[in-house]
Structure formats: C-alpha cells, structure tokens
Image (cartoon, rainbow, N blue to C red; front, side, top):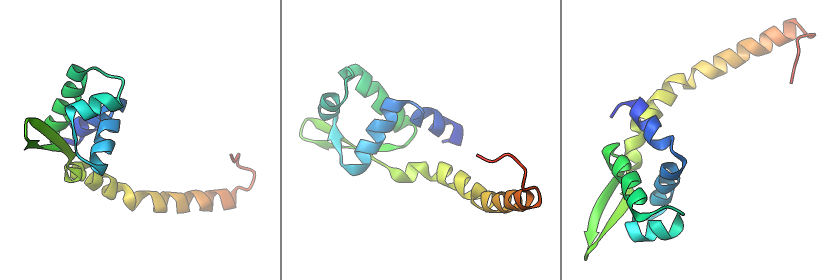
Amino acid sequence: MQRSALFRTLGDPTRLAIFELLVKNEHSVSELVERFEVTQPAISQHLGSLRSARLVSTRRRGRHILYKARPEGLKPVVDWLRHYQSFWPEKLENLKSVLKENPHAPRQ
C-alpha cells in the first residue's frame, strides 16, 4: 500500500482510535461499537478501510470475528520517517549556528 493511502486511512480520528485500541488487544465489532459513539455499520466501514490498508487482521472465534492491529502495516510510514531522521539534526545545527551569528534574530 502506498504511504499516502496509509496517511488517509489513519487520518480519520475514529479509525486512528480504533487502530490504537487494536494495537493493545483484539476486539470484535460489537466490542468496538460499545467503546465508540458510532453505529455498527460505521465501525464495520472503518474496519474495512483498516483491512484494505493491511493495518488489521482477523480471526474467527465461534461466530465472532476478532480484529487485531498489524503494526507491520505501518512500515511504509516508518521507512518514510527514517528517511528524514538524519535531515532534522543537521538542519537544527544550522539553525543554531545562524542564531549564534545573529543574536538579534527573533526567537520564540
């Protein structure tokens, strides 16, 4: 899945909250409906989006389907952040140098 699709999927506050909850423990749709002020069809739609993004997996327990987060689905985002990890320290050092050279520069 493309990184932008992952950002769109997790950009919805309810979907993000569901994902974060599923990271901690697996839940059925009915358990999720109890925790959120959203209808069962809306929860199912959110879970469908998370499944499409490969951010959750399912398993059957009796007649219930349990959902669990797949943190490895975040790998494209982690890789993207890792790319910029070396960028910021260098830029911050440059900023410190500029501020030392110009002590009258506005600061917050």
